[in-house]
Structure formats: C-alpha cells, structure tokens
Image (cartoon, rainbow, N blue to C red; front, side, top):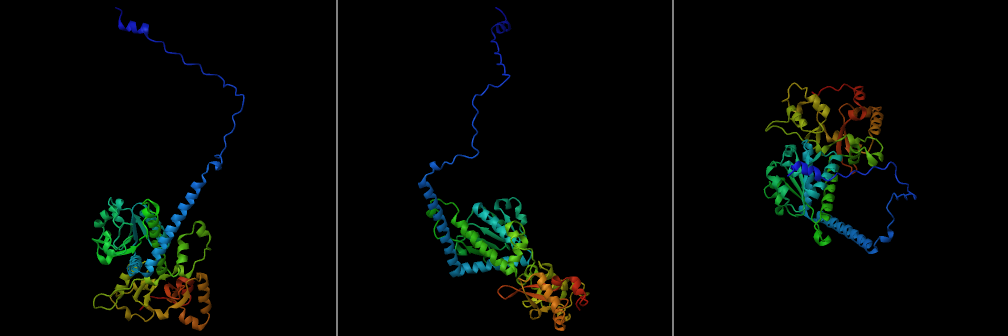
Length: 416
C-alpha cells in the first residue's frame, strides 16, 4: 500500500485558475439616464382620506390643549389653594435669589424636558437656575444643591419613582415646589415626608385624561399645562425682581433674531437693584442695628444693597465706606443722618424705561440750578419707577453720571 501522503498528492483536486481581469471595460451603446436629485412628486399616491384624518387629529390636539389651558386659568382665578401656592412659590424663589441661592429644577422623561426649558427661561431673566436629573443626583450630583437653594419638581402624577427615591436624600430645609396634577398638598405623595411649611403645590391638572382624549397616555396636554404654568411663574418673578424685565431679558439674550431686534440701549431699569431683593438687616438680640450687622447683611446681598427697614436703605458705596469704620459695634443711628441710611422719601424718582444717557443728561441739566445741586449730589439714590408707577428699584447716582463726574461735585468721604 502506498503512503497516505503519496495518495493525497495524486488525488488532490487542482485549484481553479482565477479568471483574467479585463484590460478594458465593455462599450455601452446607450448612455445611462441620470437619476433625479429629488424624489418623484408622488401626488397621485396621496390618500385624501388620510390627509383629512391628519387635519382632524391636529385640530383635536389643539382644541384639547386650548381647553386645558382655559381650565387652568379658571383654576388660578378662583381656587384659593392654587393662588396661595403660586404666591408662595414666587416669594420662596424671591428669597432664594436674595440669599444668593439658585433654583434647582428636577424632572424625569417629558417632564424633565420641560424642566430644561424652564431653566433656560429663568436664566434669561437673571434667575439663576440649574437642572438636576434625579438618577444622576443619587450618583453624586446632589452636591450641586446649596444651603440657600430651592427645588422645583415637575411630575404630573406626583409619584414618579425616581423623585420619590430622591426625597429622603434632600436637605430638610430645602423648599420644595411641585408642579403636578394634584389640587391639594395633602394628596401629593411628594409632600408626605416633607415639612408642610416648605411644601408648595402648583396645581396643573387637565380636565380630560390624555388616554380619553387621544387613546394613549403620551404626555401632551399635561406637559403643555405644566409649561404654561411655569412660564407664568417665570414672568411673575421677573416683574418682582426687575424694574425693567424686558431690558434684563435682552441683556442676557443678545444673540439671534431677538438680540438683533432690539437696539443696544441700556435703561435705568436694567442697572437698578430690585428693592424686593435687597435683604433687611437684623440686629442682635436686644441691641440696636450696628455697623457689623449691616456688613453681615451686605455679605449675603446679591446687589450689595442693604435695607434697615422696609423704607430705608444703604447703598453699596456707603456699605464699603462703613467697612472702614473703626468701631463696627457702633449703632448706625449715630452716623450722620442721610449720609448712610437714606429714607425712601428722599429717593429721587426716575422712570425705569429711560436710557442711562437720558438719565445722565437730566441729572446734569438739573445740577445747573441751585435747587438741583441740593438734592442731586454724591450719595443720592435714584428710585426707579416701573410701568405700574411703583418704585421697585434703586440705583446710585454715581452709576448713572459716572464716578469721575460726581467727584467734581463734592468730596464723598466715609460716613461719620
């Protein structure tokens, strides 16, 4: 018997040869027609009935969401719980701003997307805000919550599992504002373990469920009502915080069509500090308000202004001078009257919508007369009057006409 190797060699099939490659392409008799760059019209394939159904669906969604917004407006027009919640939410966020805190917005899914839009709107009004995803919060992002912050959560059901899991890990001192379908705080699971005085409900119910309206539970009407309600909250806050909210918005939104549509003119309202955001200094128990108390209040003032009462105020420049005082325990009532604390009756009114240049021209014109020199001088406080006729902001005269100009009027030394 012959060896296996010899047998395999004799009977191994030959490897077929590769076909030789052509040296030239075959000649094409007829040119290949060019393909259209756009798809064919296809109008003949459109189904008229399907088109009409699409329009009916659109009209159903629009009318349903319109009715939901009408229902929401009626609720806040007549329901004391809704009204109290809205006012408390405005005041709570206002206190947060005064204390140099921020608004932390939290939500999951479509509500989370609404929350991200809310953050963008708040920031465009100078209301410092950030978005916190509840799952990421449990993996380290809880560190973004500060001692002076407030939280706004968006959840239609009020029992979103991710939010309920987050609650035990939040500071007990953190105010919690909830936008939800619940119409009373006692029924909302988010508040079951939270301090009642820090639990603020913003009801956002819908009159007809999305399943009944559209046959599926996709967040549509519910997210529309939530977004509209928080837009209302943002605008209400902006009007409390700024004498000229429009000027603030445009200052933070210089880009795009919005930025291009507004001339770059700075108004007095844009540079003013909102009176409601100025902290009122607190005295130590049993002692009159001293220089030290004012400086402590100034340290937590986002604008540098400090109030000693609802109708008396100390400007940032005077606070700086106060820091040079030898005796910080000296009561402020011992300083020269009007040199440190300026009463509201002595503020000089000026419209918020006036440009800074117009205000400067007016001050310099008035200074040409003797009477003008008496009430327009170094340390003068301008009370900024908003569109409703209220003095809602304050600005130092130096910020309108310039520090160098004021120094030519008279020497501005430290008080007392």
